[in-house]
Image (cartoon, rainbow, N blue to C red):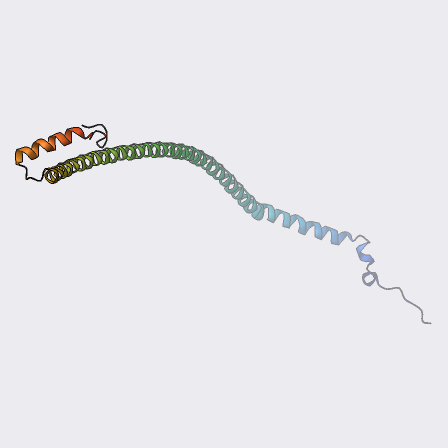
Length: 183
């Protein structure tokens, strides 16, 4: 077997474990230079950007608060108007019901009045027809009386005789029964 030779330190990876002062100094110098450059040029820009962003967020929060306040106010106004609209609608419904009831009462009263008018007209028509029928019956009774008298007496009666006989016959007949109390 061949003899193994130790590997160089760089190849074995132990250089990471063993401190190298020269390398440490250069890393420290580069770190300080980078930190100074960042502090001088980059950090102020980042800080200004963060400040602008913070101000933007704060102004957006204020605007959102204002909008929320306005929305709450609009919502309160809307609810108030909605309550007014509901009360007006209830009032309109109440008035419509009252108007409907009044219209119904008027219609019932008008129908009653029309019924009474028609009943009165019918009564008048019946009374007139009854009077006409009674007058016709009187004429017929008179004519029948004259005819019967002529047949019984076998002579022609004069106008005065006919009138007298008709009046006598009519006085004997009770027409109040036919006329509903009229005589």
